[in-house]
Picture 1 (tube, rainbow, N blue to C red):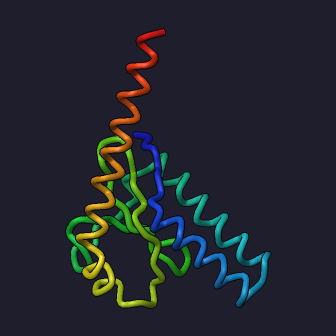
Picture 2: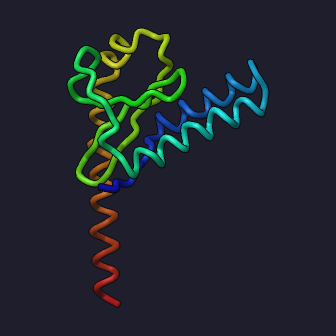
Length: 129
């Protein structure tokens, strides 16, 4: 089953922070490779969303996938996988996700509503033609 992978604004900001840190610490080549690995993982999850893992010790609402030193934190809603945030594995992931859980859930709901509305609008305009 193929899904569409969408990153929230928070996840995009996380990617920018990862790039900035990697550039400063290791240089452009390493930063680019790291971002490519995350992009490759997104493509992999698009084709194989079942690779996401439940980690009930961290969250009962979200699923996780490790990319090098980071975890993609996502939620699958029908045929869309929303990547909500990307967090380093060395942080206390359980506490950090706990702190963000209600906000992440709200972000997921809002983004899903926007995607559904856009899809309905697209179908409606297609039918008019």
